Image (cartoon, rainbow, N blue to C red; front, side, top):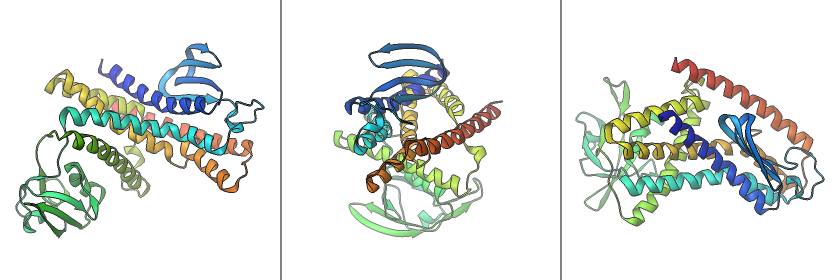
Length: 344
């Protein structure tokens, strides 16, 4: 049952992404030939108006296939017959819808269980925070100039910036102070730490705080995704650490099980919604990367067209996207193999 729930959530997130493309295609008068969920052979399909709605064999991915999107078409409702700004709005709508979905999920979580305030519950003796005079009750305002909204951001700093010094701005009794901390190696964990501990659990805020923190949650998830990509590019994490749909569904299933046994069905559902914030924001960011065949790659060509005021030949652009698609499919096969190997 847990795997089925994870698959449904994963499919809904992808479907909402494609719905963004579909909605703006219709708003701009573009003909959508097929709107599908999944990849591979069609299991079921029904045609309504000019669009075929179908369900594919593999429950990963989806598509909004527009007339003339990757080639020439004489149809006045084709993708390439529309203005460059109309086409930019259609392509960008997918990732934007993912961010909207992530915000809605974040709002639900914040309203239900609140957020982890960046307030210290204690400091570890012998570590930099204690030596610098930080105390329980201090609120961390910023780290190296970056505003801090959640304690998670404090604990993750040493993960994404191992061994780096940090300038801390904190508040105590309404006054602001600042200090520099240099991490110290914790022999037990093998990590360089500052020695700051946060309060257990979350706490609810006011309505304005709830709304504001739902936006900060999206900012946090986007930042986490970007920092993770930086670690991949710089070699701090390897290709073997990548996880695809199979691995994600497995993790979601395990998370549902553990939370259901610990706190019941509602806690398990909230954990799935919380996981969905990460997935939806992650999908939005990944699709904006300037990689051929992804939305970001298409946006690069459209932005170039807007600057040049001249279309790039569709056959040339189509070839670039085809090469990118082949490369992405090869990566997907590798990641899926990696996921299956880790499950065995």
